[in-house]
Length: 513
Image (cartoon, rainbow, N blue to C red; front, side, top):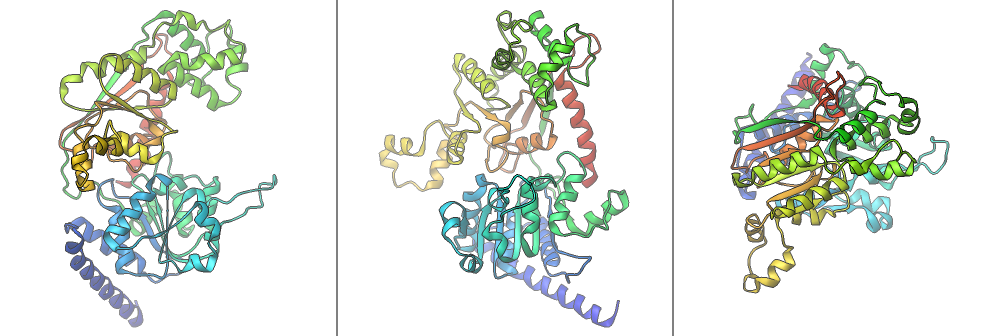
């Protein structure tokens, strides 16, 4: 290292130390408890923002701390203590209000939210002057009006040279082939941050897709030595256990569900026989493949549906004129639905609220009705539920306006008191469509989690569990996973296959630890 390099390195460390000192002085005034792991995180982030940029080094990195360790606070610290002219925060729409509240609370600033009519009416020069702009992944996704698939139209966001971009829940960019990934790569910025507790969801290529958005050199290849070096430079990953945060224990239960009726099992066998992971052993396989395997995704969807609730298939079967093959009138019940409801009802007196993660609206409806039949209170969240309603349904069985209209003498209560009181009014059971509630919801007042069917992506399940098993959870958490059993002839169910895929993906995810 030359003398000039040594001086630059010294100056950088001196700057990092001064910014860290400023952060420590700022924390008490905004009600942040000083934690060692956050101090280390702020120091690491500052050093990454102040690094000398070159062809081989970029500013920023991947913050992959486990949920609950304060990733958002690290970004707020960077924005405040390493002030830049303009910062863009890109996130899922469900998190807009949460981030706006964070900026208002800790920085006393309301950021400009770029979407809807605000995005349409603003000009680029004005947009570039806002110190903080918040937008969604949908707004950075280019459109392709022509059928050639090569001509893209980009938003005004792509015309601004940003000082810093923060991609929250950055696993939304894990697929290089998507338009949103293309849009993220085309944004201009001096510093880029990828914030996600699950940088690897399915395969190692997920993290390379994030690196491409960061602009990291292509010298890093999928070899163990290079991966380790990449993580050492650009990735911050700590778990709660590593930083000494103790949560109540979490207990995992695997519930193997046998096929309870011959007719249900027979139809399930027929549909599974079109899958590559099972043996084909039915005389009508040609007809089944022709109708049910026009696309692999459709066939896999049918296999999952038959495992959960056979009636979910009835409409599709009628549409394809296959009712002569499948006699749904003989299926009076669902093995899976019965097993889930029995487990929920059997655990009714545990003193723990139940959180059920499901896949289909029809499945949610039948579970809701059967649980209501036994006198338990139920709320549901699916893809049609608005973000504000999601939070209300998680927290209460009445809306805020209903609450205050009944309790008129409490109109002067602080908003925080409404949240605290409502925790005692929360439903006994919450049924959630799994893809709609893994981001932006706090569910630590639920202590039993039920997965009606395994998800292809284990990171989705981990995010769902972390909604409840997080800082603030006061009781142990029980997780129940329901998997349909095999067919007794050497062929496995779709859900067993899905569980095997999860195991393989978890092996890949361990590379970060």
